[in-house]
Image 1 (tube, rainbow, N blue to C red):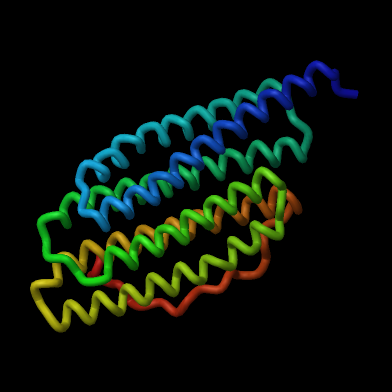
Image 2: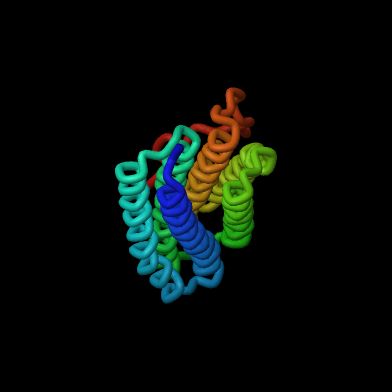
Length: 236
């Protein structure tokens, strides 16, 4: 029977790692919303704040990975506990990638400040970002509660993000065909919309890891995807 002291030490270590995951998740949620708000308001200072804070997100991922590796090496956890630690590492990796996409959005905002406005696009992008942020919040709640049903709901909601992206893609094509002066800003906005769509994919990955954590199996069914469009040559 495992020593009670070892079990208590493991539980303490796990709580500390989970606290770091939730802190990281909160920073990423904030980065999603603030990068979209910076775009809508054409606020380069807020965009720069998002870019600077990405370093904190990266540092948290490194710390989580180091702590998880240390616990695995020292505590030799049982299978279910090992699954928890491996899930933590994968969630941290997905959060780091979402933070990178938010940083990229902020970089594009600085460029778009001096370009013609594309009517309705910043508002639509902000709505799309808000949906992804809410999905992430629910995915992290599902992780903390070990709620596979909520994780599956998040996984299915990625379809809505895909639909938003496709609608924006069509909108940008229309603007570019009607007015050549809109081509450059539309290219940047398309890149931003694609980044947010990819954020949704990483949130879906987090939800799938929660399902794996709870059930021991990854989802077998492919999640629904909205009909896509060829983007070849559009991403600058």
